[in-house]
Length: 402
Image (cartoon, rainbow, N blue to C red):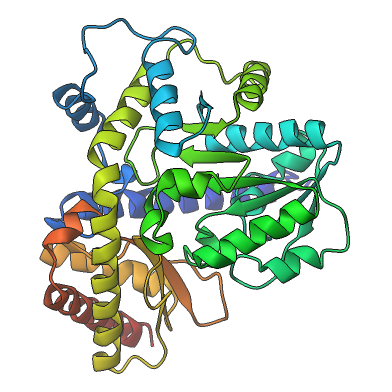
């Protein structure tokens, strides 16, 4: 009799080998990144538990007493963070959430209940569609209508022309998966006005709103005042451990806190995340404009380096970054670019790019570049030299692969 489990055993062994290879590649990448003396930014994956704990203990938030008691179910330091966020955004109130996904789902649920309309107008590249596993549909029973299929924020005309009445317009500022892009200030104002004409409320997915003030030329309260509610993240740009906040009118935030409890988001203790968020507001928020300014220098140097090297097709998008993050596209497989980046880090202790993905046309790969505090020491010449060294390794790997 044939062994009916033979093929399953082969598949299982092959899967195990693939997982081991993937784990080894990940360990190698992290070791190379952690060992780099020069980098444009240090991501959370490069951190170590001891380092993060020591940093939090050595640099507590300004004005906060480290001898104070820990929070219990969101009192103490969490309440202080909520007050701080409401003050920064100029809103009546704010509520801390363990994740941005939870904050967004609850915001949309609350607005649907208040407007009586479960339809949400949003971009197909928005975080709500791309990275939350259809939570607004499956958890809250909401529906969506696409604002536009173009890789940018919608225009006022597109909002006016939507053929269904919607209760909430959700705008991601900046739109990360389109290249961290933002509209002009007058365009954003017009889009919000168009939504108001449709009797809709406006919610800002502002996970990266903190760094958008430079592009808009407006303060955080001025930007937040356009919307009925705003979600902000504490770990994407502020280097917090985790967490988010939902800000808006007092009545909405009170309702959101009730839903937060129902969703299991009122944790027993959240003081590490809250303290790191407060520290990020102290330390990183004032620096973000300098990161945005330097990102434009880095982007320009990369464009110049690609042109000087004769790369057949490349793109830095946007050409002038709207925030301190942008995309780079190159005409090579992701595995080739990943390997070149690791070799550059291992051989020169310089990390220029992190992971690449093939999410666009065949033959092209894209990576996201973040310019943060470590990048401020890089000159344009430094960037061009690192890019040239990276591309030399890319060509070598590509030639070896045939």
